Length: 146
Image 1 (cartoon, one colour):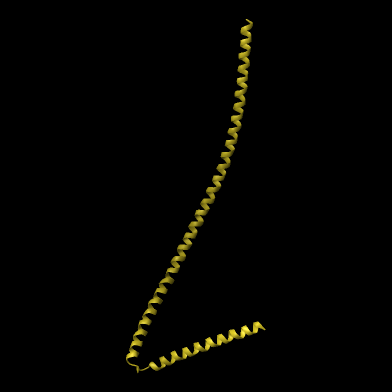
Image 2 (cartoon, one colour; image 1 turned 180 degrees about the vertical axis):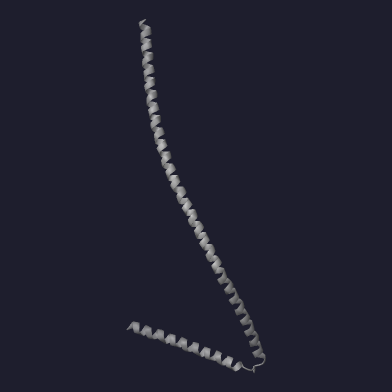
């Protein structure tokens, strides 16, 4: 009978060691699951913050797009006006070209002398202004070198 008692005692010790090992393993797994749970909570909070920031960004982009659309529609009128100015300038240019061809054929068109005189005065005035500006810059250069 002592043999059965010793064998039973060894089996009891082995069972006890196995139970202790399983208990430690369960405690480690419990700690690991707690850490994973905390990590998931942290990730969830960060994800919520990221979603809120993304929503704000989308709203900002929508407002910017609406603003750009409004500004584009506001400038389209200006571009239409520029188109009209271009067409008017083209029309004036064609008319002047026709008048110039007419003047080439017949240099004695009634009422042309005041037109020519105004062109001559404009040229004279632009030459005066250019020479005045040139003289003005020369005077300023002389004063700064003293």
